[in-house]
Length: 78
Image 1: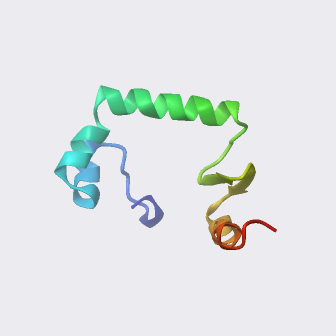
Image 2: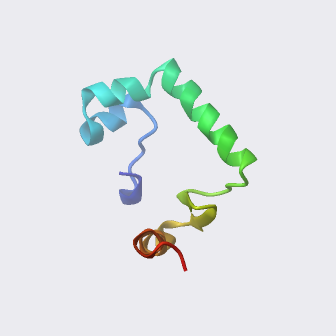
Image 3: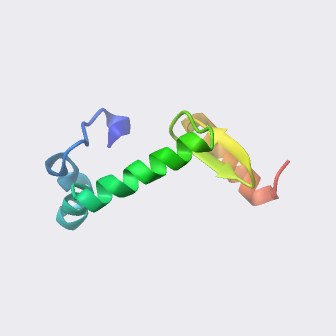
């Protein structure tokens, strides 16, 4: 995966990670349009980095914050 330094930018590179069907779908025009729409929506929402998770309007940015997001979900917030 990207966390292991692999280049996952092509269907051929994705195939060993996600399988044939998902790799081919990821390379489609429809997937490109969906990705563009999601990136545009993220930018409009003020998201500037990945991964970002927004829960109840509270943003958690960065891999190191995913544990905090899990605690938020378990406790219902601070």
